Image (cartoon, rainbow, N blue to C red; front, side, top):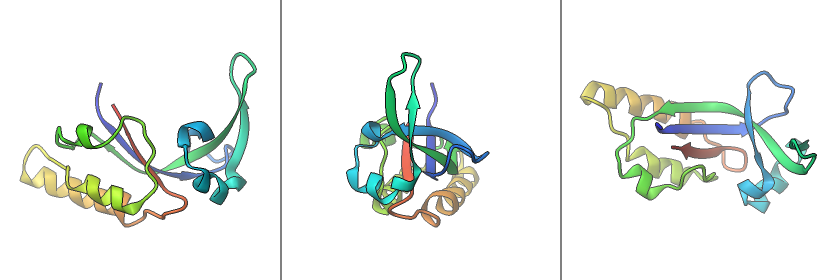
Amino acid sequence: MGLDIWHVTPSHNTEESVVDYFTLEDLGNQKYAELNRGFIQIVKDDNEKSSLVIYFSELGYQRSGMGVEFKTEFINCKPYFDLQTVERAFQFIKGVDRTHEEQLKEDFQRSFVDNFKEGSSIFFASW
């Protein structure tokens, strides 16, 4: 299984750019939920159990490109809500060569750091 890194923002389920959702329980951040309460929706699973969720759209995506230390510093699928954490993640970028690494850093800066908005953006990685 590879490493996928996401920068997402809340959106309504009707938007074409919707990627997935977090349950409010998975977000684990009451302040974030309050700030984005207009995006909270109810979904039912296959057993008709209801959950409160926030759908999100992608603002940035990166497939791998991080040093092995990244996985010891970050938690799989844990949402992070602050720019400082995203800037910390930047230091783990590792390319296959210098040119590749420079491109990864440029892309990460543009897609994760420069457009990160505390209060609406979420950063997370999955592996």
